[in-house]
Length: 584
Image (cartoon, rainbow, N blue to C red):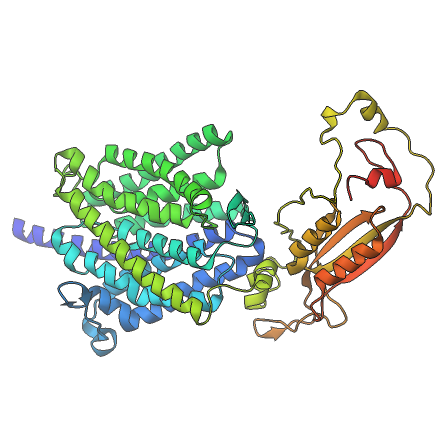
């Protein structure tokens, strides 16, 4: 057999093998949808978990529908307007036998990734209908057009701009869209404390309800990223080099983040380190085919620091509420990864023909990378601002205050809980404050005198059944808790016990359905507030609670009053009315 025949057979086998790997890579990228869903659900609160799962399901399904009709043509259609846009085509219907099936599937799964990034930053307060609309617009128009510039033979590709797997085209675009959307719709209730002038005085943390699920999502994403970055590899050597870079950068980023948070905060931060792994993956996505081990390490180091800075910047500087850190992970590191091509590209990498600034290539490639970043940022900023503004002025971006407090699962989807059968606690509002109606004693047992410490453990006297003290138990809508807490605080009550409960009355709750079948009884989320009063007239407490809770609708709540026979303050040993003086 001649050498030419052997070469032809080898080439044919290689082409077939890499064609199959191309589709396997697409399947890995699709599996990343599960990772995004787990990260977003785990990093947010339990009352919205079902809504988040629904969004991550629908952005792919809706994206598929619009990508068939318009997105694929805009991305990979014949050039128009000087490489600005592809010409829409319905070849999937009119010429299926010759249609480019592989490219369609591959680009579809990437398109869905862009849309799902936005979901995380806008979680827990976005209308589901609004999410469906902007997700469709991103998949139909916003992403396909800028991706055409880079991958569809458009003007940026013609100039030599390099973004192998999407730091710019996908992650930066998704991250900036998330930043714009979160800015327009505002922060979650209770995220920021503001003074009378509207200035933020304190940032509150809302811990995710399931860090284990969040971690599982991160591992799924890292696994899928080998397909994300490596699917377009054309040789075995290039694929191996891409796998190397996709391993080193996130690992280094995570270690750097762990050390930095350990030093800065006194403890290694779990959720921040999980974000750092994703940040390293985002940063290596554009240069994964053109960098060596040294470049991968440096890119990872910067990514690990940049994600911490990005989260801090959103919280403390621009006051943007991003529950999952999508802006820090995707936007900041998408920009960094794109620019790093112009710094660390080297012809030592398989199939690479360009050198970056630090490898003797000068400023040419760096200038192209900066041009691509600026133009894609501008395109995304203009289009997504228009999209979000139009949605906000028509159907509205944000749910009502009550819907947000109670949770989107029950309000948007009729799902009492994503964790049916489990007891969940989700009272996340801030603590009570000192005011002119309060009087507080010694703050700490260690600061008390020996006499005070001795008095705190003395044997109490006999029980007095007519002590003049009352326990007031208030059962109310969860959405009214914050207002009730503030009203009682202003009255002079500074101590209360709060429990989230589930309940229904004679009306048996709303007639919700699960899988189309009406459930017999729906227990609704309620809050139970218990206070002990003595010096404050119990009538005042009742009146305040009634005024605060009244809406005129079923479910406003009930108030129960009990006689209290004995109160003993642990700190001082004071009893009855004396024990209530600085805790009411």
